[in-house]
Length: 248
Image (tube, rainbow, N blue to C red; front, side, top):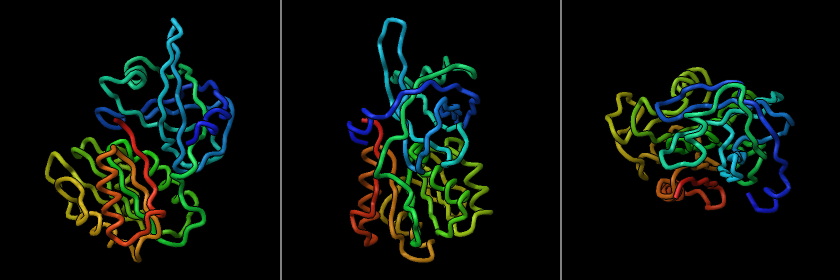
């Protein structure tokens, strides 16, 4: 996202129509747009909160829902103890409340359209949100594109969208799904125990029917650096590896 794009995006008031608990620390907030917009899988929005004294806090959140004709979008928000925006959503916000957002924003971390080569997705924690939008779009559009997702999580209970991903693993053709659990042993034969590294990334990429034509990596700075280097080791050109980073 550039400052120019953000400056031209219009703020709008959106109503919270549903709240779903996803993990102990992450909830999904379904927001009904007052003004519809066309977004692409991988884009995000800015959310703005204004206190009675005029203090403003703003954060960016990826859109987890697939592009559709619906005026409702999903944001998966992780509660950060030292955050300014996420505690409001988790502790204060209720169905019926309104918040301000602008978007869609972002022009580089986008599902490749059209795509004929396999796609490799790598995420950590809530970083799976924009990748989930891509997977959901791929399902809704019925594109014949092999996809592999490698998702790092601390524990099984903290896997964002876990049940949906497990269902897609069995029902969606050419979709491979692997977890890397960092704080407990993996129990599935297809998953890994510990942090991702070049060996793990190569293992998951090999589950695709051909070498990936591009890769998307989303997570913390340290995670993205490790994952992007591992993807480079597969032989992909740097320009085909798209990254999104969050946190300090």
